Image (cartoon, rainbow, N blue to C red):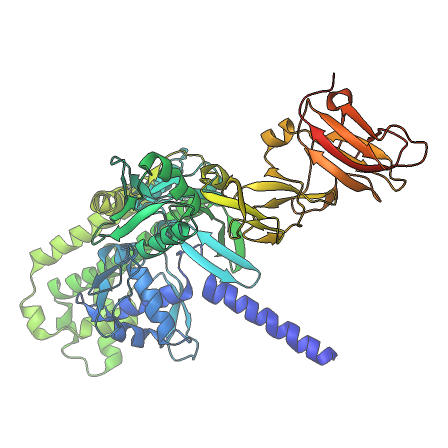
Length: 638
């Protein structure tokens, strides 16, 4: 048993770690899940500027992804529909209508320039073995912007989940610039489906937001939905509207979908129903409004971490400086190597050092002659001449020496030195360089393609109870004892599905319940009414009951406090209700059981003579006689 527990615990931890780190949760560094990173890596490998069949991209990606082609294909389609890093050709589905994409063999894709600008630099990218050890794949890309916030992410892992909403590309980059400048910034989500959003409870990426469809309500008999709330499609939205109509929560005549490139759902209202009466009901009972909880869970330094939007921006601002510094130093090293190579090549040819090797008979002598010939120019070369340098010089063809252009080489060397000075300046002023990079390479080039779509406003969430129309008939059938809006019998009053009612049965038992479709309450129901605060405060119950000695009691009370669906009794235990009413200024006539020497068989009492007590209080005894019946009479006795 101990062995089984040990194996189970070990395997479960390994499985949980794998799902969290390698499948469901994105990495803070590049904002990608492993499958997205592998798709990009495959596209970088295949990139030739032309479109590639998605099927071919998926096939190439399978070298790195151990979960089959279906998961790669669906991830690639979703990734491309973000319209950030992958250019698409063909039917990739429709994020507005929910239409499915074509098969992988019919659609094509390629990288956009932004992907290369943001992600691609293999020389500073850290790689690891793929799952089968045959290939190498990136651990993370050196992303220059917070991709995590730009495209968002959603995933469920073992014991944790992440829900990161997408933000506007330009606004995110501007927030990074503000962070580099050590200025304040504020960042809120932005969705391709547009719509409206209330971000008052966003809590920097770990609260919730309310999203709404944008309604055109200018026509009093027609509502047109022109923008969708995040997370909905025209199909899901229409289904929710039709479901609400079937349940009588809203009254409509028809719903038509005219959506194409843009959303246009037309809701025609029923006769006698107008736009002003229906808009709130759409928000309350359909997907036209929804609340989205968010939490920014990421993989950071190899472990899950819960961050805020502000922390993510600050992390990426720091990482941007590190990435740009690494790129500049790499370019600096490459240019210095190139300058060294061009300098010794220039000296080798211009000073005719190659003439000194014509009479040498051994390779060692040739090498020595070249090195000795370059020594007088050591101050100009500034770096030790290595064996590799000499071998490179010896590979220069005679034709190239004869066509050697001195002025061209000198101009190239001047250009290299100029660029080295620029790099040194950028390294000394790395923050200014980072800001100019973001402004010139991202904001100026892409601002027009990425305007804000979602309008940020403040609105109160519609209470479904308040928006519900009382269009159901609550009926009670005394013959069967059933109560509800789906039963036969007499109509009591109009209700909505969100109302609560107080029901008092003939036994004195009472409860507050949601309006039922069909519920057995008793064949002798004493009372049924709304259980809202106003009704409970204004309704006084007068109950006449008898105790186990059969003496009559009267009790006046209000039912103000209760727990939904919990049973109570309006009279004490072991007592029987004789009558109950909600009259306030009438009287009650009590009939006693005839007995020898009992002269008074009937008495009338004014209801107002008795105080209103709590619902748990005992009643007041009317007489020490056995009671037979009681009935209420309008008006007090003289």
